[in-house]
Amino acid sequence: MELIRQNFQQVVNLSENDWQLFASKLERFECPKRSILLKTGQTEKYLSFIEKGIVRFYLPRSDYELTFAFVFENAFVSAYDSFLTQTPSTYNVETLADTQLWRIHYNHLQEIYNKSEAGNTIGRFAGEELFLKKSKRELSLLTETAEQRYLKLLNEQPHLVQRIPLKYLSSYIGITPQALSRIRKRIS
Image 1 (cartoon, rainbow, N blue to C red):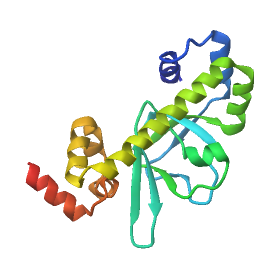
Image 2 (spheres, helix red, strand yellow):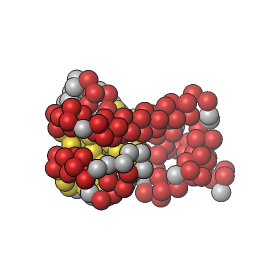
Image 3 (spheres, helix red, strand yellow):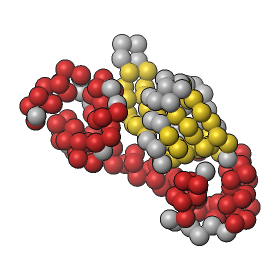
Image 4 (spheres, rainbow, N blue to C red):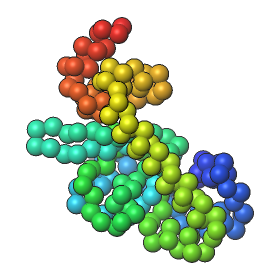
């Protein structure tokens, strides 16, 4: 829980009362590798913070899965569109490693927003972080080649390449595993 507090302290000076209110609503949640946190058609009820682990977002298809996001330790994770609108998700969210989360239920977060000015700042911070990651990913898909996206991953997020199976990495950058193998061979 201390990681969350440190993360928040970067953007808002939390009073002890504000922190205690927020912390009292957090619950620790542990799940093993390959656990489905949210299935297509379910509504996201939690905004979570990853203490340990990896989470993958993907669209299930009959012949393949289309991975579109990964989230690692010390970051917020949520099917945020579903969370904000409280409508069913159009994708799945699963763990790729044993994962430990601190999560807050939608209703509890609304209560914090109403009771604490710092709560509003915390909510905005989490939402902005999720939005910026999504925007960066969309721009990458629209403006870069698959090889450029892979090289960018190697430079900016080497932990992705080391901890994610290649079939998910290739899906994430929008190519087949075979095409990723050719790119890796060419640049090595």
